[in-house]
Length: 126
Image (cartoon, rainbow, N blue to C red; front, top):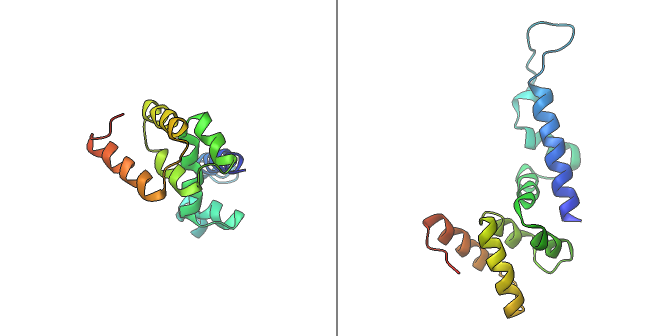
C-alpha cells in the first residue's frame, strides 16, 4: 500500500541520514565515498528500484491526514493528486475531505496543483 511504502521510505531515509553523519569506528576522520556524496533519496532509490523523485513523492504522502491517506490506499484518490494535496495544511485537507464527501468526487491532478498554487499564494479558501 502507498502509505506503508511512504512511512517505510521515510524511516529508511532518516536512518541513512543518521548513518551518514557518523564517523567510522576505526578512523577518527570521516571518509567520504562517492555513494555518500549522492543525495540520500537517490541512494535509497537505487536500493529499492525507484527514482529519487518517486521516493520524494512517497515520503510526501506522510503529510496527509489519515482519512485522505486511507483513500489513497483504497485507490479512491490517485497517487499524484494526493502528493499535491499533501502540501495543504491539515485544516485545508479536512475542508477538502468534507467537500469530497459532499460532492462524491476527488480532485484531478490539475485541480490538486491549482489548490496547492492557491494555497501558496494565500488565495485558497473553503
